[in-house]
Image 1: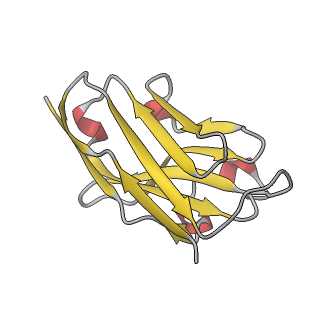
Image 2: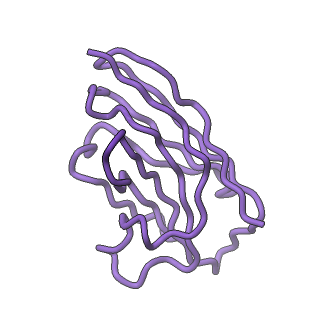
Length: 130
């Protein structure tokens, strides 16, 4: 079955950097596979929000709050998803989750909606102190 395992979370000071990884298994991505792979986050008492998504064509969509600071990437065989986070702020503190869906969403504006995703990792905590 599809499994997603996040790692790389931790505690950093404001302005610092972290790189999250999401190791995937249970599915194979070929040239014809349609998918969205995304990072979400959830702060205490808040709803889960989309951070960034990448689709099978390599098209990325970032939430406004992280544009210019976060970068999504994949390894060559599309089995590991990364999130490079720079210039971290206290408001970035949250549990970060990776998620995947097949096929990719019909409308790009849906790609950062949590309810569009079925497969989720267990999350990794990111804490940014001021």
